Image 1: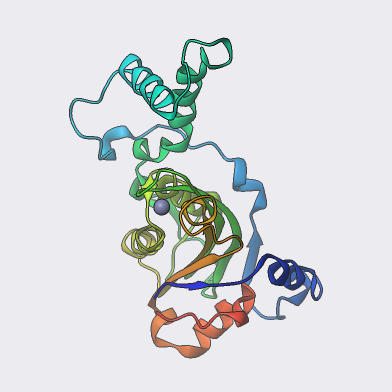
Image 2 (image 1 turned 120 degrees about the vertical axis):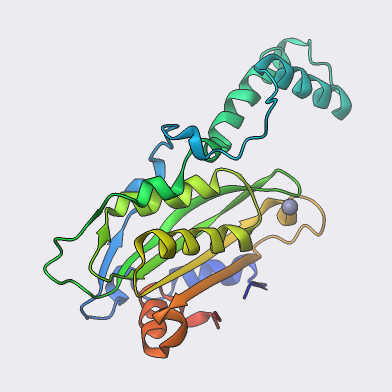
Amino acid sequence: MPYVSGQGRTGGERRRRAGPPRSERTPKGTSRTVNIETFRAAPVRAESASASPLPEGRPSRAEAEAAVRTLIRWAGDDPDREGLRDTPARVVRAYEEFFAGYAEDPVALLTRSFEETEGYDEMVVLRDIRLESHCEHHMVPIIGRAHVAYLPAGRVVGISKLARVIEAYAKRLQIQEKLTAQIANTIQDVLQPKGVAVVIEAAHQCMTTRGVHKHGVTMVTSRMLGAFRDDPSTRREFLSIIGGQRWQVEG
Ligand SMILES: [Zn+2]
């Protein structure tokens, strides 16, 4: 269940400064926690275009650049002045990065899993994964963090693959609720673990730079499946690992 928490900028900064770093606050337990900041810059490779939901008749690059010129003119500027001359080409290249997820197949990313786990059956948590997406209503950035956990049922998957599943869905036009559900459902469907949990906290620039101009507002969405939905202690352990005591996260 999504909700918007109105944390003012100062409140957020105070909260971030309070207490020891999160890694030191992690409770001692059997859970495996991996900080995967390093995956933030992992490129999304277009290697399985088969799953792309792109409709037929994709416009050409020249058509896309012409559309950017139109938007520049509509904004009130001259696309032929020196500073803007190469802008349509740059914008189209940027779009290739922003929306690289359409060329990714998230299911294929997870199909290679490992069964030699020595019976490891405790929670696997990836937390603080940098999330960059674009709101499908205004096409402006959604910037935040994702936390993903699953409870293996005999099979585990490479942790970079989980991060790439997040990227594959994030690098599309999105709403946060759908993004959260897509990530959780895909991991559940392909890996078939005992449970999956996904929490995303993100700021939407359509809310901070236009419209209501509410700076510092973070939207939190969660999707809990299997044991994370049914077993309060499993859910508590996950929320405690990701530092989620401050949220009333519901399935
Ligand atoms: Zn929006």
